[in-house]
Image (tube, rainbow, N blue to C red):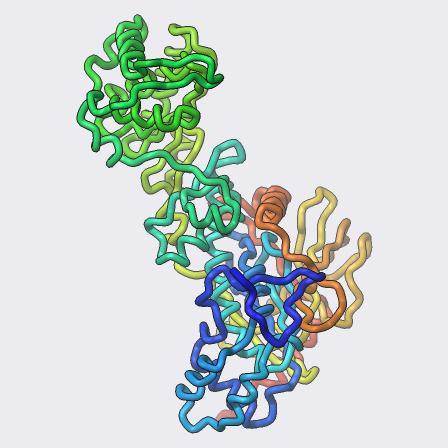
Amino acid sequence: MEPKENGSDHKQLGRVIDGTTNPMVTPLLNDLYQFTMAYAYWKAGKHNERSVFDLYFRKNPFGGEYTVFAGLEECIKFLANFKLTDEEIDFVRDSLPGSEEAFCDYLRGLDCSDVEVYAIPEGSVVFPKVPLMRVEGPVGVVQLLETPFLNLVNFASLVATNAARHRFVAGKSKILLEFGARRAQGPDGAISASKYCYLGGFDATSNVAAGKLFGIPLRGTHSHAFVSSFMSTDEIVDKVLRSADGKTTCEDFVSLVQTWLTKIQYSPSLRGIFSETNQSELAAFTSYALAFPKAFLALVDTYDVMKSGIPNFCAVALALNDFGYKALGIRLDSGDLAYLSTEARNFFSIVERELKVPGFGKMIVTASNDLNEETIDALNKQGHEVDAFGIGTYLVTCYAQAALGCVFKLVEINNQPRIKLSEDVTKVSIPCKKRSYRLYGKEGYPLVDIMTGENEPAPKVGERLLCRHPFNESKRAYVVPQRVEELLKCYWRGNADEAREELLPLKEIRERCIKQLENMRPDHMRRLNPTPYKVSVSAKLYDFIHFLWLNEAPVGELQ
């Protein structure tokens, strides 16, 4: 996508920043009240007042105790190309009856050249209340960033976290495939899910568009429709297969497959498992192998897994082996996955042993069929022989939780800290421009995240520090950090010449995510009853929060 020219310097360290992946992400991807507020700010002469907003969430999703931050790159791309067209400005004017024409002139000159964004690096493990992004700039323009930023971060972080949770329950050794395009909430839901599932630890996607856009590895074979479309092997016209080394040719691959099927049928250890297999299925497998001899992986549950699918697959795989090709494996899309995967593995092992085919017992077994965290966990407890999981609906739709619930709150304007109060203490915001740090303990695990005022000294390694719960007076602890990491880094500084963080390739963001997840204490990560991770404020910030709270809260009067 070509970057849209605008009035801001949309280069990052000499590199042009492309527009957002979805061209529908424009300044009009906004709630109406953002424009009504922008007009009211402008009308009151407040539009250029320097403001600070925090983007954060209040509770970890899926009943867990961690979240993966995603969507930052798209936010920066949006900033870099922020500009309202004349057509968009006309629409805004028509949507605000009675607005003055001079406001349109203001909108026409609006860009993000005076905006600064500090953020936790994308792919990081993050926790409630700690700002994921701190956005500074003229309140008129920053207000117009709220809805797009929340839209770009909420789902991205939710689905990346969902992917990370599936990776945790499946284990490091399993291959995870995202198969959700057909069930996702529209095209953007499908594309975004593919991108952020990969970021969260999945290995590949079936989504071809996402593969092209983001360089995600693609995986896929065939469906039941392909298998049931064949009636018999007579339909296979071209039966010739050239060997993998190109030196020999099999003139009748179909007959070779039939020969191997007979050998399997009369193998002593396999006799009685099956008799007649479905010949239309055999035709489909043979045809697919002729089309993709280097990548033959068959869906084996169209008719009967053990009495037809597995034997037919083995016959075709053995025929391929004669000419130097190694079949990849099978996919199970229904039935008792624990039992069937185990039986399939036993079948492959018998073929390897009795027919002297080294490595045949290590065929990849892929399972699909509406999998989720719970079913994978159940399979692990039962025992199974699945090597790869293809997961769709529950993953990309985030079936277990609809939204993350990120918010965008004003914490300072004209250097004056602001606070949002509520009877629900979880909705009270933490005021002022802050710095955030992650403190690590002796074992190398993160112990606590702490927020401080902007001008407070940074925590130091080896120095005892009091960490306080933002709102609960009795929750406090001393920490002696062995390592201190400042979380917020500058990703956008408008037209300023100072260096800022580069936007990394998706693969490197994914590697950061995996590394951070591996570095978390196991009890924070477990599925059931995870230990809450501590988020705190400094003693000085704690005192200031409660001073401002008392100062802003009206005093009641009893009659």
